[in-house]
Image (cartoon, rainbow, N blue to C red; front, side, top):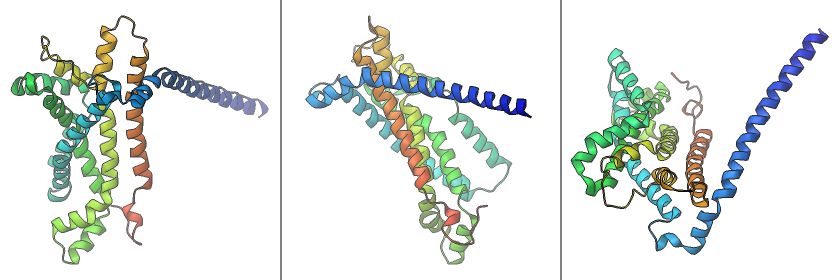
Length: 282
């Protein structure tokens, strides 16, 4: 018995040491990135360089956020409408399960595939003068299946009693969706949207594919943070500069902020089954 206890203690100590080593290594890398990359954004913010120059880190970061927000606003209404239709207006059968599985598979596809969509389908149609529009459409196409699945499952989380009681009180199906289901599913959908934005906003592959559609372009490079970091590292003679660390830090912090906001929404969200006594999820 004493040997088994000692063996268990040794195993626990080894696992604890490995976990501490991994966490310490991650913290050390993040601290190094912060120390190396914090100065350029702070200097640009103090001098308001982004108001006079289109090539500063803060101006590129703000532009990237605007493009990401535009892509999200473009994809979200269609995703919510599709999720509502699949959840509330279609029957539960094999056809719906097949459609949902295919949409979920599209959401899990690698980003380079959506870059190929932008490069092969959107870029030739819109032309070189609308590079920004092509990037926004590519990002929205990538976000669309993720948001459709999120909207569907957010509605499915609501107890069937909400629907039955609302219809029994004389509300129409659309009134039930608008005033009963959507208020309770909004937080979960918002959290999923932020998670999708964190994933899409940190990927450079789709933008690289779109930029490859015009290899001989005389225009300025696309001022989007992931692509800017990739391009500057490829073309730089000395990649270990504070500007590169600043771009990497902004990219990491943006993703972390989106994920943190999504986590807060999940923790503070209203659980529909707990709002009224006696209600249970399906």
